[in-house]
Length: 168
Image (tube, rainbow, N blue to C red; front, side):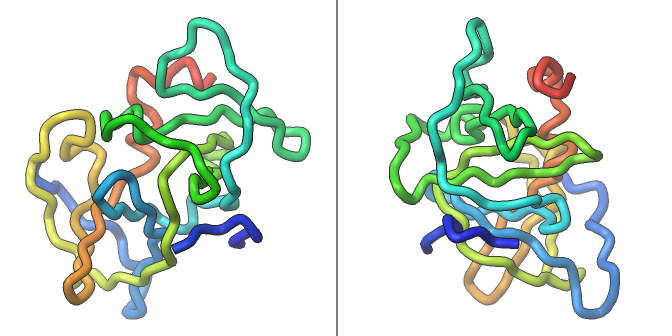
């Protein structure tokens, strides 16, 4: 599933469904100083950041569209959407191509690190963080030794009102 361009290096209401004792797999990625995770089953592919076709009067976080083997894919810079500072685009910048209920969308992140398996016991409720990533968009906090992943419900985050125009 990983392409050759793969990377270098409010109160929680419910925990994610864990399909069996082996746990659930999350793709770990970095934005700014924080590490996040999303359900690996939502990931179609991982690519290096490439130039996109810009669309006039689009929200600032919407970078444009790219043609991915005949499919026009909207590209969202999550660092801008989540107000995580001024993004830079270099050789390590990654686009995670998601397939969300049949809709393909790309999200720009700083890096992708690995796929991590978490059991239900390793997922803790997330505190209310306020801001753009409130409890509505979080599954919880994944803990693995000293490492902590902010687990994002990518379906909910990509279906916020400001994303409506991108979702058709």
